Amino acid sequence: MITATDRSSSLTPTAPGEPHERAAASPGEFAPVNVGPLEVWPPVVLAPMAGVTNAPFRTICRRFGAGSLYVGQMVTARAIVENHELTMKLTEFAPDETPRSIQLYGTEPTSIATAARRLVADGRVDHIDLNFGCPAKKVTRHGGGAALPIKRRLLGEIVAATVAAAGDVPVTIKFRKGIDDSHLTFLDSGRIAENEGCAAIAMHARTSEQLYSGSADWPAIAELKEHVTTIPVLGNGDIWEAADALAMMRETGCDGVVVGRGCLGRPWLFGDLAAAFDGHGIRQAPALGEVTDIMIEHLGLLTDWIGPRRAVREFRKFTGWYLKGYPVGPQVRRALNQLRSTAELAALVAELDPDVPFPAEAARMPRGHTAGPRPVSLPEGWLDDPDANVRLGADAEALVSGG
Image (cartoon, rainbow, N blue to C red):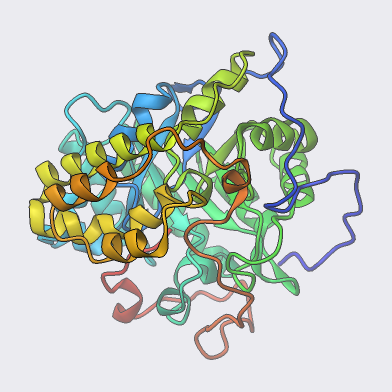
């Protein structure tokens, strides 16, 4: 187990309110990231996020930034094994979607390997990511998610079993720095992933205790990159604008970036990223009318996917993200929070001024999770012996969502 170390460096990750200098990449400065047989350019991955990165949202994102790797939201391995209806719905992809990428959650080798084998045999996926970073209490208190990497033997067994079951389909893992600053596991996790055949790794540079608070620890990404040398290392944390992605790669040496909360309500961020990595200038942010057109398109895709009633319920949270920073007024926001139909959405946004420009400060306003720090809920005695041969109970394999 790696304990906290003094990693003083010149790296300067910024807070949400402190933008990096806007700059495009120089010719040849960055290379595609290879995830097994998949060549990803720009070297950008959509982070799997519960209730967000379903097929309709990925379709919107892909329209702005073709070439990136868009990972579907986390699904539970045991639910796939048991053919759970709602979970199997989450494994669906748009007809033109390629590569098809999904994140699996599991806490023991057998079920997660069985799920991976089934997904591959059914021709559903081109890439499998494993979740060892979810900090949700309902997950960590049973030893899953961000709590699991401290048990090195179990982590290795799960990764090895999944890689073997997936065959030619590349397997990656995503994890956090550790449980807290006294129990950092990221170097061990990277080594285990590399040794057991992962095609790449990604780290959210916060601890589970931090949740989503504070700043991401970019120096830890640099340390991980120095430690893991044979497979790509991707960094995740505090990428709000395209310039942040370039800065992270320049300052840490990582091979690619994972974008999470920064794209919530801003799917055009992937277009900005593609332009920046290709050395082009970033287009002007969309005015309010273009944003509301995207909202209507998004809700339409959700409706086609899961039907009007569920679609409207799921879309409500997106309305606040899309309109973050725009002066639309509290009455409109309240109405959108209680949205009942596509027609109501169209009527509400039709009354807004389409020429209102995107507020520059809104790009760095956090969206989604902002909680933390908070003590991590763990099974009794979980920190006692990192090399213990543990087996988790059925509660750890409950139907959960996370990312």
